[in-house]
Every structure is written in structure tokens, then in C-alpha cells.
Length: 103
Image (cartoon, rainbow, N blue to C red; front, side):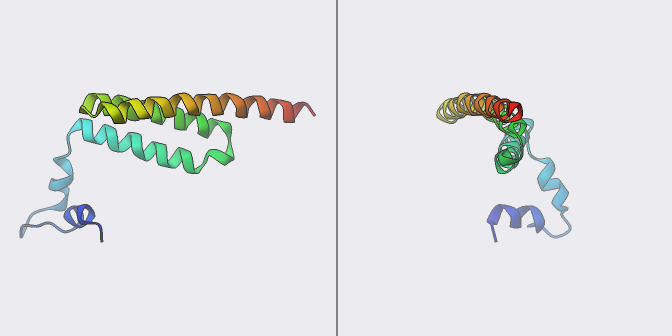
């Protein structure tokens, strides 16, 4: 079992609540968790619609913002590049969908 999950599920102190360990997460960490979760979900659903590729691009932009705010500028830079790549892929997918719809 992943140690972080064990920490959240099983409190380390008697009579301590697991909810208390989750509430100690700061806003920046919660924002990063949201961004990465959105990236994973949208990436896994990209084949369903070009809109999920756009959602992935937005999530990468959020991840980039998180990286720079957190002080991990290499992560922020890489996520910014992934955002640009995803926007280009979205544009190509929309154009392909339009060409397929005209036939």
C-alpha cells in the first residue's frame, strides 16, 4: 500500500481523525492535486472527443501555473510545453473532424 494513502486512511495517533490530516493540505497543494488529476482524467479520455484534448491543454496550463507558484520552475516549464503541444493536437483534431464531417 502506498505510504501516503496509509497516512490518510489510518490515523497515526489514537483518537485522531483522518479528516484532520487531509484538512492540513494547503491551497497550493490542493490546486496542484486538482491540476494533475484533471490532466490524468482528460488524457485518458482524449480519444472520445477533441474537447478532452483541449481540457488536457487547460489542465497542463494549470499544472504549469502550479509548478511556477510552488517554485519548481522546471516542472512549470515542461507543463507549459505540454500545454502548447496539446493545443496544437486539439487544433489538428478539430480540423480532422471537420474534414471527416464534410465527406
